[in-house]
Image 1 (cartoon, rainbow, N blue to C red):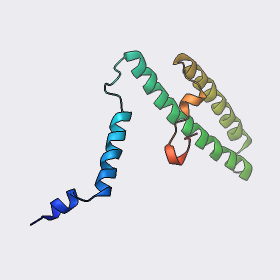
Image 2 (cartoon, rainbow, N blue to C red):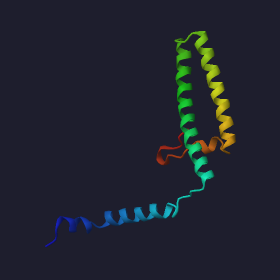
Image 3 (tube, helix red, strand yellow):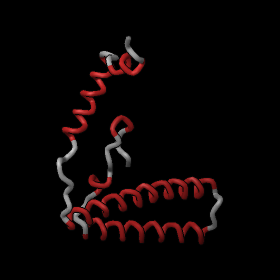
Image 4 (tube, rainbow, N blue to C red):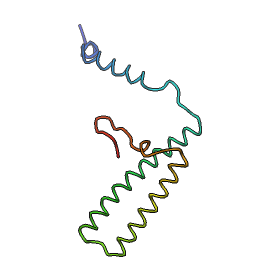
Length: 116
């Protein structure tokens, strides 16, 4: 007499598809973690700078909306402009320091498309 677990394990196509998907993922992953300190540092910098760039773009869009809506004073608009210029300069310095470019910060999210 077969148990429910036997029926699940003998589930046919879905189990085979799941197994092949797991094998594909396993084959895509590296067998060893690259523990080279320079590569780890660069990868961490890439992740952090990607997040900063995403937040910068979101903040810039919000600032533009507020400017267009007229909800900011001239002084606030000036401060925002200077802040975004300084942030852009600092981002350029950090990207150069870590050997990154704009394409490196644009992560591919698969079906969702590029991040930036």
